[in-house]
Image (cartoon, rainbow, N blue to C red; front, side, top):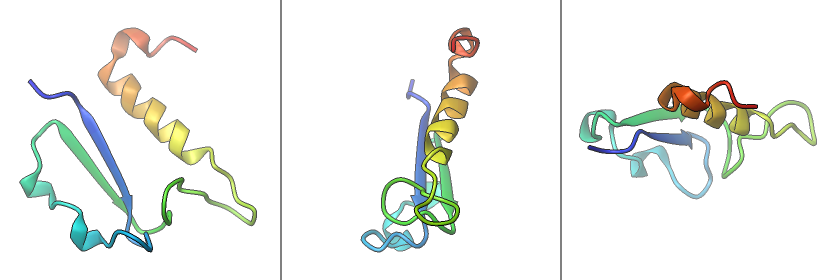
Length: 75
């Protein structure tokens, strides 16, 4: 049994191009791959400068809530 894993990557990451990310069909079913068009390198900052950093924590919490239903009501 594999732990549910979320793999997030931005296509515009300046250090790791999308070609370096495994293709979906090469990943186990326990891995969810989200290749986003923007996000840069680490953080997925969005909005007008200086930007907001709330997208990534919210996305991670949503992923955890899907796989840890007992913890989804915890705030």
